[in-house]
Amino acid sequence: MSLQDLLDAVPSDSEERTLVRSIDFARLPRHVAIIMDGNGRWAAQRHLPRVEGHRAGIDSVRDVVETSARLGLEVLTLYAFSVENWKRPKAEVATLMALLKHYLRRELQTLLKNNIRFQVIGRFSELPPDVQKELQRGMEATRSGTGLLFNIALNYGGRAEITDAVKGLVQDVLRNGRDASRIDEALLSSYLYTAGQPDPDLLIRTSGEVRISNFLLWQIAYAEIWVTEVLWPDFRRRHLLQAVADYQKRERRYGGISPSPAVIGAK
Image 1: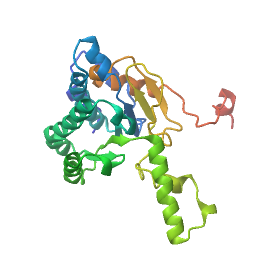
Image 2 (image 1 turned 90 degrees about the horizontal axis):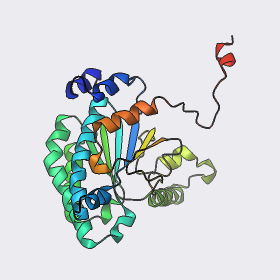
Image 3 (image 1 turned 60 degrees about the vertical axis):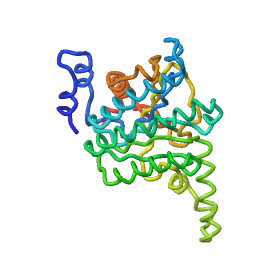
Image 4 (image 1 turned 180 degrees about the vertical axis):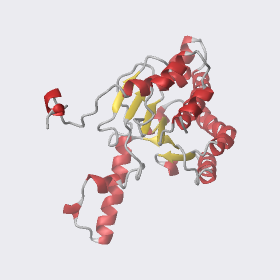
């Protein structure tokens, strides 16, 4: 993907076009993660059932996935369903699962056309069998994609992920006699659901809530966080572009300090 790929999809003389031109394509975040929040409030504001907010949110998913691919991001991770979300009413959970299957069936050809690889992170085996089957079909069909890696976090929890990683690591230590003193962050990271992927550079949260909600706790240690009041069903390409543009204005120090002007110019 390139600047022209994105410009071709953006109306001329629009705010979005200005945003696109403000983005430095040489300094894009490699991995963007999004906490999709506000579906229920969106529906409540319109005096609609909560499930209608989830339905409306599908259009946002489509727009964000397409824009991420056009931008040339390496990884996009969307937080769709947490391990805690099973506490919601059964009817709402059932609707969410049905919408997920509907999305995959409808969008699979688009994913393939855009060279997007689809992957699920979370406790996959605890999902309903029919949902597992649809997800597996999508992952297998897009396995050879070399463009955007599109993660959906389903039945996901950051603490659950770290717990699962530790279990896997301990099992291998016991089985293979690995020296526990040689365990480091890189080794533990290789047991996470996101093994082999770059950590998120940018974490976006919609609906104005300022919390992490048990999402990618290990991986977002140094992510830049961008919060918007926009509810997820209203989140579109321009909002993602604004988040990326704002991200590029920040200085990432990873716990260090910025060199002073004198030091920068010193020989």
